[in-house]
Amino acid sequence: MPKYIFTCDKCRESKQMITSSATETISCPQCSNSMHRQFPSIAGQQVYETVDPYTNVKWTKDQQEEVKDRRDSHYWEIEVPRMIETYSLETCIENGWLKYNDKGELIINKPPKKR
Image 1 (cartoon, helix red, strand yellow):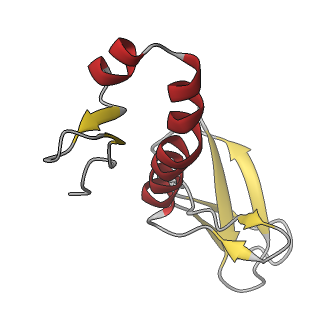
Image 2 (cartoon, helix red, strand yellow; image 1 turned 180 degrees about the vertical axis):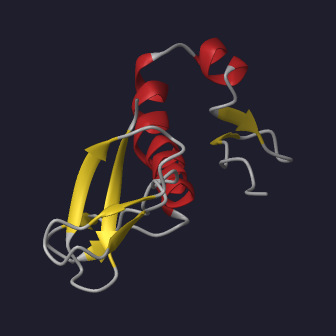
């Protein structure tokens, strides 16, 4: 049998009981009024955690997109120049880190455009 939460309308007493799913009311131990079964919480609550404790930036709905943008910009601004110094010219061109411009000069490729 499942565990349900029952709440009294009169004295606001709350009690958890293991009862059958057909039981919708029980007697209140405080005031002898009827206690009604509460609906179980199915959906999770939205969490507003502090992402950055120093600036007090809170979680937003676009947080995943912001993190992806930061990851992409870090990759193209820091990691790609580091990899260009490490890998051979052929590898850099194959991976799209370097490209030739219209004048035939070898330049660092720009990140792909955002959709």
